[in-house]
Image 1 (cartoon, rainbow, N blue to C red):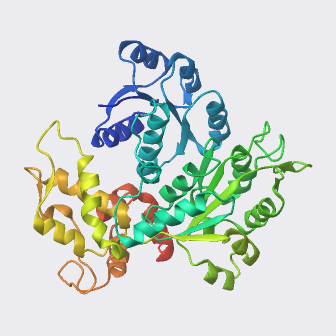
Image 2: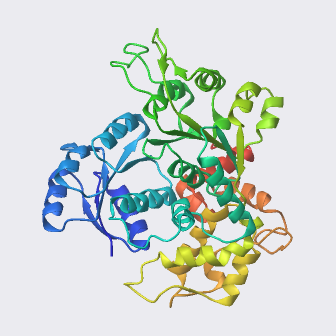
Length: 437
């Protein structure tokens, strides 16, 4: 079993990440600061370290030298991404920005382990190795077509627009494009434009000069400059404010940025990948998204298929997720035939992410490891009316559920009850025009 040393000073993060990694058969040792991490390194050297950049008694980067050749992935906030990129120059295998998608974390850790492992004598075909790095499960025509498109597109320097519904795996596809590209040795910086406050977007992306605004006590490198030599992934590009859209266009046209409050431009060499679930064409009509930026972004386009369009992959995906659940404390999880039929007939508005949540719920609720349909907690598909939905569509059910419960439930509780992530909940709120009261 692969041993991971997880070093983070926030107990909720340690618990959540440990639980997720143990689901995928990693053995996880915890440390909350540099001192306890050093003790763990001496007592039981790990196969990989997952380390927060900022710790109470110093910088996580200090463990790089003490860990010898142990592959190390740095965790950090968006604001400290430039420091994480600097850590990679010091020997870190990769970094991942908080808040991160668990699937992206798993792909990052496995890639770091592969990079740190000695070369195998029988490596198999290049295509098999590429499939492993792609991290896309399934053999449907839609997913095979996507794999082939990623292989072809990855070798170019062109901008790529990834389109697809929430939960389909757009960030996983973006990371696969980076790992198969000539820029794989450079940084991969993922930014969710929807999570950055509008007033801070330009400073976060382009950086700022000292004294650019109140509180800017020193100059700071922006995320675009931090991605120099690598790949910048802008998720939910449709949420980008108009002023930031204009500045981003300058990056694509001239390869230059100007930090907020600075007098000179800086040259940057980045490949831009962008993703959205929004209808950008409609936004152009409504004059909320720039047409010239749209055409710059859409040099190449990849569509990530929703799960309902590749239902034949559901059994393979289910096996993949169930294999990641820990078995040391009970029986191995097993889907009954009736449960599998329920999975295959569900519409999956939350896509693969919702499937993973449903399977975890079913495994937790099953008394003997055998997952039955009622353990999954799936809402009926449109047209299968019952007392819960009254025959209405899933969108109607979503709206009614949120409106009835948002005053008494937190966002985390709402997302968990719906079987989706907080990010998906936020995105669906925007589509349904249901802002948080």
